[in-house]
Amino acid sequence: MPDLITLDGSIRNDNWVVVSRPAEGESLAVPDDQAALIPADLWLAGHEHYAGRDDIGVWFDSHEEPEALADKVNELPVIAVNFPKFSDGRGYSIARLLRERFGYRNELRAIGDVLLDQLQFMKRCGFDTYVLRADKDINKAAKCLNFFSQGYQAATDTDEPLFRRRAS
Image (cartoon, rainbow, N blue to C red; front, top):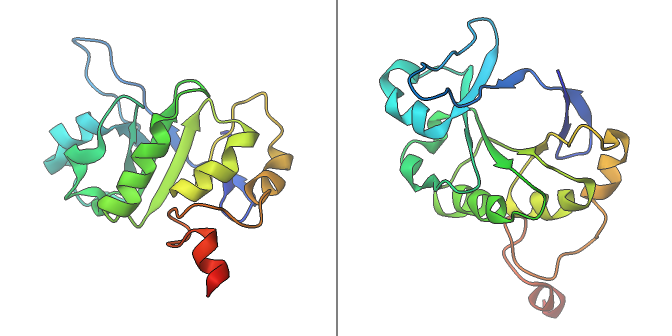
């Protein structure tokens, strides 16, 4: 299992397995003995089968829209957002939509091509756990999560921009 970084910078074992999208004509193979993150659209298609299970979460690819799960997001214990490459910023928008528009309260995880210098920005968008790319040093993650003491803009972690906070 790869390790996982939490919002406070601690490192823990990742007990969730990401289940890849099956090839056309194949069925989804969900492990029986382990918590699994499955493609969001497949969870939605089999919602009756997966409803109420705390060992099934979903993952979004960066080109997918979270609106499909809008009224069901808080039924999920974990939602992961895949960053296929570090330069693809659509995952940040997905995170903000899930937190701010749809009110998602559970674990929001960044997976894929996640780099250390992105962690602070991911945190501000609402992610609270992170699976780093395998070639990155996980022991540097805590420092990267808190590299800046204050953010200038309003985000999921603060409702007011810095100039308003300073004025009050």
